[in-house]
Length: 133
Image (cartoon, rainbow, N blue to C red; front, side):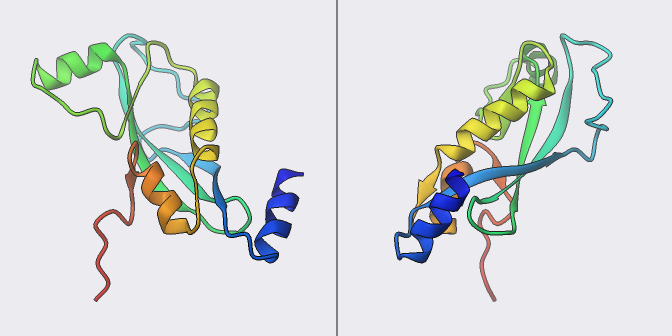
């Protein structure tokens, strides 16, 4: 229903665009069957396909899903920024998906670039630092 309302508003000239999580993928694990061998210490790349809620198409935003223990082992006490990480204390794909969905829906703007830049504050956008030739 909200998608229809948003599409109608868009057609009338109201240019507020909202992000929508369209799908998830991982090149590291099969999301349909994955459960970590060590639930306290794991990581994998998660790709969120997010696009405008009133249009087809999506861009890829990359995240490292990991546990605090994995960060401790992997970074060996180094100082690390948290961008592009989804840090979980237990693995539940449905919870991760809902968290991403909720965050995406809160990202609004007058253009897709404006919206995508908001999402890129937490996930690595495939077009980050893109320069046209």
